[in-house]
Structure formats: C-alpha cells, structure tokens
Length: 157
Image (cartoon, rainbow, N blue to C red; front, side, top):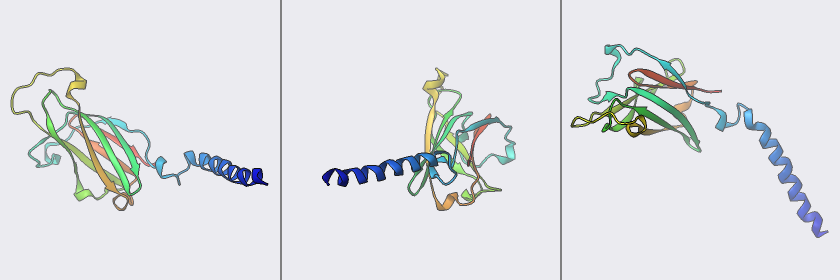
C-alpha cells in the first residue's frame, strides 16, 4: 500500500513533465514569444534622430529578451567608436507605443569627456537593459533597437 501512495504522484509528475515538454515550441508558451535577434543595416536620416543630447550608439551588437512574470527585460549590447562612452539608455520612440505592431527604441550613449583610444571591440561594449510590462507588450509583434549603422529586431514567434 505504501508503495502505491508514492507511485501515484510519480506517475502524475512524469505525465505532467511530458505534457509541458511538448509545449516547448508552442505559441502558447510565453518563453517562446520572441526568438533571436536579426541585424539589418540602416541609414538614419538626420530629421529622424531624437533630440536627446546623447548620440546613438554606432552598432547594436546583440539583443535578447528575457521573459519575467510581469513582462520582459530587453538586454542590448552596443558598440561605440571608442572607449569611454557611458550613460547608455534605450529611448522609446512614439512614446513607447507600437507602430504597426513594432515597438522601436533608440540606443543612446554619452560621449567621453576626453579623447579615448579605440581599443578592442569587447573593451568598448556598452550594455543596457529595459523593462517592459505585459500591458505594454499587447499588440507588439516585433521589437526594434536602432543604432547609427544598424538596427536589430526580434519578432514574436
């Protein structure tokens, strides 16, 4: 009798784990809502650049979305032209509202106060994060991060 009492929860756990594993590629699984980022070259017209005192990062190297219970955290790595850039921030365009299902951010950084050498690319990287609530993600099909020379975007699966 005691063996049966232990055996039933084991069967239920095994079946539950198998069912949840099948949801791995499902659109219902919130951890699958956004895939890997894709890079695209862009030319940003001068009139489109934000009036933020900081400049946009040269290149957006990587972009990842980590789901959280209340929303998502955007993690973005940018590459400025030299070392010493700081005060990085993602600035939402269109007041943080999606345009045609695309939520767009500009990656802004502060220039160094003095001349800095170029250094290696990894020594120049600037990493920023941005939290978005689930309510802000309603109607969003894609998230796009703009740099001066390229943009990266992630689409919902």
